[in-house]
Image (tube, rainbow, N blue to C red):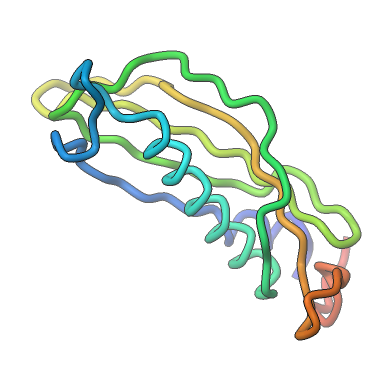
Length: 134
């Protein structure tokens, strides 16, 4: 399997409904909850890509472009965008959908970087043992 094929197969999509329990005082999705969703989706995509133990080591610029009101549906899409020696960078986009209208727009986006670890919590090559071709 090629790296491009692994990237394609590891794309991860998660949908949630924005209920009042995860909103802030403006009745929109709490930013911390959005970040948690993004971290989890990016972790799943990275893990599906390399099937290794991973930890989040950094996030890149997170853009909150549009507030997400309670009563919306959101879809978080994580896709590997860069593979390093011991790291995997995943781009996450959160799309906002109105529950009762045909609409979809990009609301939040950012990148998360993970490092693969061995049993002793030391970094290891993410492609090790995968038999990938370029």
